[in-house]
Image (tube, rainbow, N blue to C red; front, side):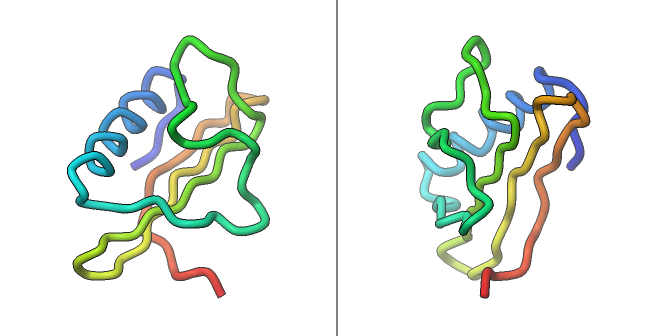
Length: 86
């Protein structure tokens, strides 16, 4: 899923937040590219890091997902399946 606006990003964040709360996915370490802002600290009205990168895993099947966005230039971002970090 691609998003191009702040509103689309925060609709995705809301959906992901609910999935984490329900236990459908768990946040995992995003590795060296992660930003300084914790996923739980993302709020639509607040300032954002220039780059956002968060990784999640399904506890049932092990599938990894990534939420990434470039907010400084407004080029958008995405929510997608990903390969495990090595």
